[in-house]
Image (cartoon, rainbow, N blue to C red; front, side, top):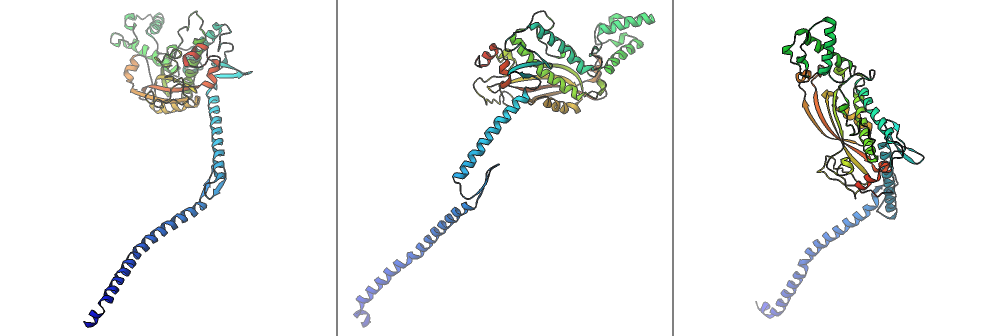
Length: 411
């Protein structure tokens, strides 16, 4: 105790020194841990940076670089981007060239439109020939469509069910031959009142209806096509009507070719995949552009998209015009997809937008003279989108259509 008292001052000083040393040493562990974390993070960053030099950078159709992005990599990327843009232009040019096949040909730097494969020279963009010649070519082509679809080997054969008047005439011939009497009032309409006719007369009618179905490939008439208002008249078309007629004819011809391809091996209506063509309609009403020919026009953009308009969102723009095609026909449902495939093969500008299907009542069809065979058929209403590239349509457009579409005249 005496020692403690004698050395109290020294003991206190020693304790203070020990406490001071402890206060100094105690955070060293924390500092070490913090330093260790920082060093580890720095090491990871260094390793990551070193790893950049081990990355293989592959440039499509170009060299492969190992290491970080440098000036050579950027130059290679710029080069491949330029190549891709050049490829895009090439593809666009090929698409436009294929889009104009069987529609426009070039001679001596001039675009000459085709009508049914025949060159219609000196008509567009301005009429410099007798428009009656164009009228004659068009009016001879439409009956040829009927012949191609219905009776390639018998072009003059009627490709619709016998009308009441036809049957009436046949009855007259039959009556003269067998001196039989026929109630002519029973055949004034296509829906025959079989209750008022004898069995022999009913059998006679059925035989004539069946004979027609056996002799044709499908049912189609001139009314199945969209014919121009001046068809069959004496007035010649003007330049706008000629242009619209060409577009109508191109697209209808594609539909006709597709149908003919589906039915090529059929001998009659019963074997045909497409039994009846009711109607083809080309163009869209209500747009105010080129008499409603082109669909929903955007006059300023080359990439206009409006999904509220259609499935694809495409509208007519500075690159192409959009034309809608409506098709109504009676088909074997197993052949519908084949028809779509054949339509796509006609031209690269088609897209099917909508298909509406309803079952056909065979008894109702037969009562109107339509015999479709043993398969349950459907009636389809198809809306297709067709693209016409401006690259080849503009040179043959009349000036008034260009004004409607916002295309500079004289371009």
